Amino acid sequence: MYVLLLVPATILLVFWFSLFFFTTDEDWIAAAQGKILENREQISKLAQKDIANQKKRDEYAQGVMKVLASILYDDSAKKDIERLRKQNRELQGGNLKHIGIFSIPGYVLQRKVQVIGKGAFHKKITEQCIELYGKKYGVVWANRELAQLLSYPILGLGLIVALSVLFLARDNQEMGLILLIGGSLIMSVLVYMIYDDVTDHINKRRVAISRQFPNVVSKLALLVTSGMVMDRAWRETAESSDRELYQEMRKTADELDNLVPPAEAYSNFILRCNTKETTKLASAIIQNLTMGNEQVGTLLKTMAHEAWMERRHTAKKDSEAANSKLMIPSILVFVMILVMIMVPVLLSFSSL
Image (cartoon, rainbow, N blue to C red; front, top):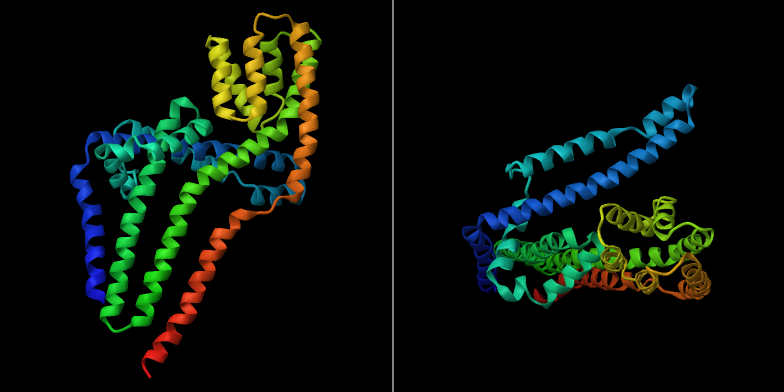
């Protein structure tokens, strides 16, 4: 039995290692770009954490509480930020030591196999990443995501099967079968989590944007009807909060300040948010760029009323929604536990 398992294990591992012989500068550059974007994302999160910690420290300005606050809300994020920035400078300078080699075979497969690198699955991941990170960086994120989804299962399954064969060869059938079945299930869950992480992030982001939309459109309507021009009202609204929709609005405001045509800037906003509410808002603004404040203000008031009514219906649906995403991991864990229980029982019966 273990001899038959040795064949696929050998094929998987040899195939994975052989891909390194086909690597080119293009693969390493793509991996470096992905690592730089990953570091930037971490820097952004750490910067937000540092700001929050600073606010906590400022709340306790004297005495023992100040000492405790400095311990609980330290400024270690600044050190991590500087470390990541240093990595990015080295990567941009051509030093590739910070790139993890485990995803490199995935980049090779994308480049060598057109069905993988330009197929429907790659297109789907690219669309998701463009929504999260914009046109400029979406393709790089998509290539990084697909490289991991291709490379990790090949290496992981190869190692799991090889270790299972090692235990089976030593007549430890119980451990070998548990490792083979359980390891394969765990690897499947991990790969699924990598893919589902992007989808889950998008879904949560869309829900957050939809919930923030009524406040945004109401404030826009108030500012525009009071006489403020749309571009200024958009900027004022965008800077009133740090939540998801407001961040996307700031990106659009920055594009407008950099002389990007309004139609293009608002179209990019539609792509990044990708909700029916923001699409309707941006489309209306594009169509009414030449209208006066009075007409646009009336349109925004109507949109705000509809948004609040929709918010009420959504709140009712959310209260009844079930968390179905835990179903698949729960089933896999149950199966793995069942295997761990049944394998020793079956082996004990077979030995009688």
